[in-house]
Amino acid sequence: MTARRWMALLFAVGSTCFLVGPFPGYAQLVGASADGMTFFVGSILFTAGGALQSRLAFPARRSPGAGRAAWWAAIIQSAGTLFFNITTYQALHTELTNPHYNRLVWRPDAFGSVCFLVSGAIAYRASTRHGWLPARGGAGWWEAGVNLLGCIFFGISAVAGYVVPSKGSMLDLAAANWNTCLGALCFFVCAVGTLFTGRTLKSPRHRRLHELERALPL
Image 1 (cartoon, rainbow, N blue to C red):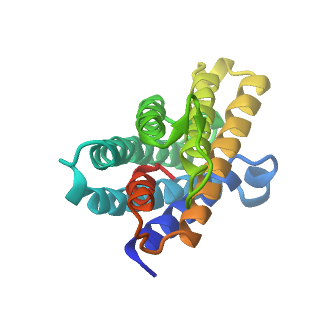
Image 2 (image 1 turned 60 degrees about the vertical axis):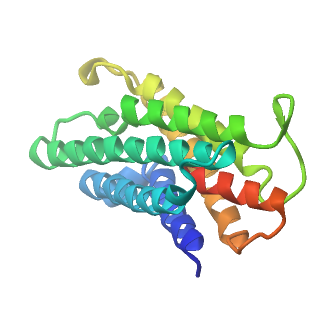
């Protein structure tokens, strides 16, 4: 297990929490408090993965091109995970103290979602592409694109969840939950991909991909 694989494992388990938490029927099965704890644990795992990701990107922070992009993507993504920590903790605390609190509180925090979008855009812009599309070839060539798609889903979820809780419709709740699930699924796929490509890559082109993969907010 390399440091990159530990990072990927943290993101994979954290993504699983955000995939399962809003899934239809899960809250009814385990209860609102356990559902809230699922999101909170997932956010903590995201933060741990983000911290390890930032440490891996730190040595190349002043390198032009991919190294600098990896550093900024990792730092901005880590800031987003901290916003998720605050949001999920506040939601869990409110759920435990106010049984009438609307579950729309579980929406991805808007600030965290913006950080994820910015980070994903930086990583995708620095990745090898043919125009707007990712260039095939090399380990993890598809991860930047799938990661950015996941960031977009989380952004849509944040917009769908931005309603007054007492007036929120089931349509808003469904849109927030399903987009959270889709975003988490994209991150999970990227994390699993990194688990299989976490070994040291030696060619110059593969080293560049290796640096970029460090920046992906899995």
